[in-house]
Amino acid sequence: MLMRTDPFRELDRLTQQLMGPGTWSRPSAMPMDAYREGDEYVVAFDLPGVSADAIDIDVERNMLTVKAERRPVARAADAGQMELSERPLGVFSRQIALSDTLDTEHIQADYDAGVLTLRIPIAERAKPRKISIGVGSGRKGISG
Image 1: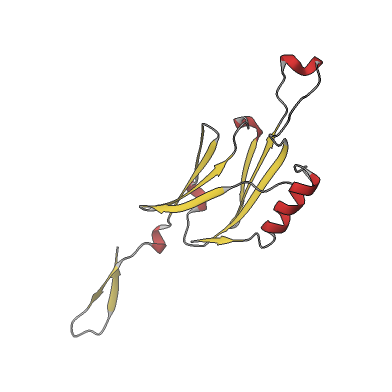
Image 2: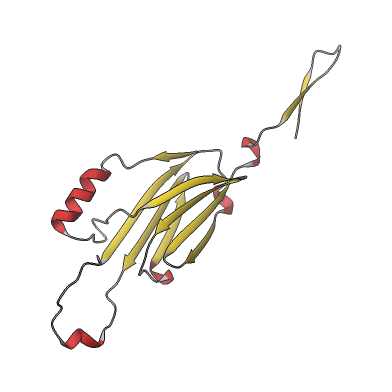
């Protein structure tokens, strides 16, 4: 149901390691899990340290885009010298092509403990249905 659209992901990871975190013109990728749960697809993105107001979710046609920005946190030690900084700051982005069998009009988003979870229902037209066979008339009908 989900189609991967990021063929250069490994190249992006290598570039991020060499050049640092992303900017709005060159966002970094964010890790995700996607799985089916009943009549919906669940996509979970790891965004630790990102505030909910710094996350942007868009759907255009069947392309889902998630952008997030991890901003520096004001610290009491800002007046001092940074000794160690391993947590990347900047922009993270991910695009996913959704199949026509998903209902993009009813996506639900929840953000808790640094994980953005999107629930995308399966469209009614994509759910299995029973086909009844008419006797003698030769006609077949679809029942929901």
